[in-house]
Image (tube, rainbow, N blue to C red; front, side, top):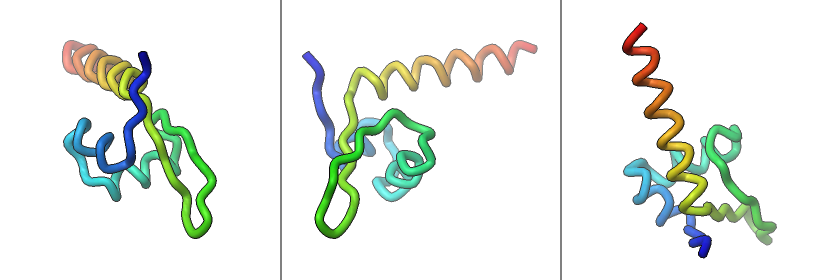
Length: 67
C-alpha cells in the first residue's frame, strides 16, 4: 500500500526543512505530486518514491567516493 505524505511529514522523513523540500519539489529534484490549491500549491509525496530516491542517491555517492 502506498502511503501519501504531506510536505511536513515528507520533510521529517527526509530530515530536512519543509521549505527546502518544497523548493526541491518545484525544481523536480524529488518525486512529488502537485495538487491544485486555491491560494498556493499543495504537494504530496509517496513514501516508497522518497525511499527509492534515497537509495539511488546513496549508491551514487558511494560510487563517486570509490573512484
